[in-house]
Image 1 (cartoon, helix red, strand yellow):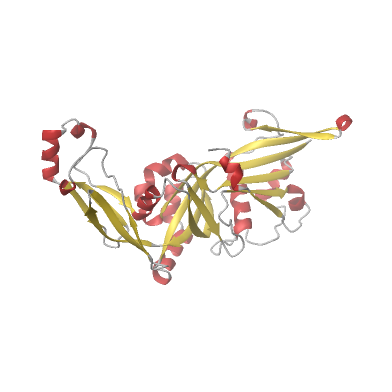
Image 2: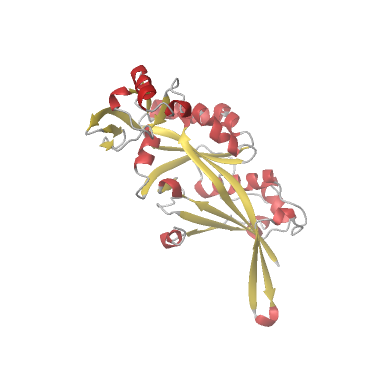
Length: 334
């Protein structure tokens, strides 16, 4: 009987690094076990906005392509109010819009729709980034967003890690100085695992594969694989796959199996490790296309990476098989 461990990610989130403080509430869901990608993408800049036929239209520029685009049909509130009562400000670098109601707007609601005042705190302005605006605007159609991965890491205290890690701070400084037409983005992933067991039945000349996502609650393996061990392994293999230019550890084609990160797999009788990497954000119908000099996901919605533990044990060059999932597989899930 052979044991295979599949790592997959049951929660994922992307945001601009410059909005780390605003993302802290969401990042709390990823504390204790987080794999993160530091990436770059084309920087977008809000140029202006206008009211036209009762709609708000936002114009923005892609600073890499120099192309001007627009966003329309923006709904700031889920209640009707004349736009003359809405206050809108564009941030100095043009990275977000801040909006709220003018005093006259609050007085208008007191007369026309007073129940709304109980549901909203109009004393605070609402801030929304250009990237969120674009994503929301495109949510009814399938789009692709392109990224270059610069660094891959892990953390059990993700907010603190992102705000203080010297590699991340260096990347942010470097790109602000040398590539100010690019935006530094963060993708955070929460890993979980599933055990597969191949059982050969000699009389039938066949192999049955059994899967269990609750394997850690049972005694399938000689010892349980801890969340920290799985986080270490997923980080090491993802770095091996993409080879980001700011990573140093795990960036060689050949690793010594005595290394603690991989050795734990052999000790716990795991024969193969699989990483299922979903790249399709269903809610916004956005495909996340990630590339490095070593590997490119090529706009696929999902990829499966497979690595034999025997190769690691025999100190061979690590061979990672890649299977890019066909888009038809995702059609079945719709």
